[in-house]
Amino acid sequence: MLMVQTIVLVGLAYLLGSVASGVIVCRLMGLPDPRTQGSGNLGTTNVLRVFGKKLAALTLAGDVLKGLLPLLVGRALHVSDLVLALMGLAALLGHLYPVFFGFKGGKGVATLIGVFFGMAWPLGSAFVLTWLLMAAAFHYSSLAALVAAALAPIYTALLVPTPSFLIVNCMMAAVLIWRHRANVRRLLNGTEDKISLNKP
Image (tube, rainbow, N blue to C red):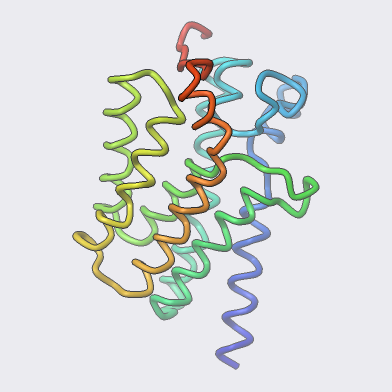
């Protein structure tokens, strides 16, 4: 019975992660699909560049909740730390490879933030603070995400020294860095776009 519960919870976390907040927000506003605009990504950064801060904020909130809500449900059901970590991983993979959108998703930063806050608020706070500091200093969303992801296992070891969290968080950090490989190439050759807050 416990195995069935685990499979159901992990599966539901993946399905929730597969809901593309950016696509839904833009459709509700009568705007083009973000996958057809800008970088072609359905995440917050591309929505910000193409449609502005308000829609980006809504997209960000939706993507964070996709990572946070499954873990809150898991905690309410008193699942083990391992199941909780697997639910977080499933939500992230749902965002990266959404079943509803041809397995072509976003970069996963906002959803990972939600997962980390679901694990422990200090962990989520450390990740967000790192992202904000790097973004403020260098104005590259991708660089901020890469540095925050690289430091996430260290933050986990220091703030939430749970073996299952540490193992899964290392996996999630590695996946997020892998998803940013094209950004790394653009950062190295100087063609990466900087964050712009000019749009209303």
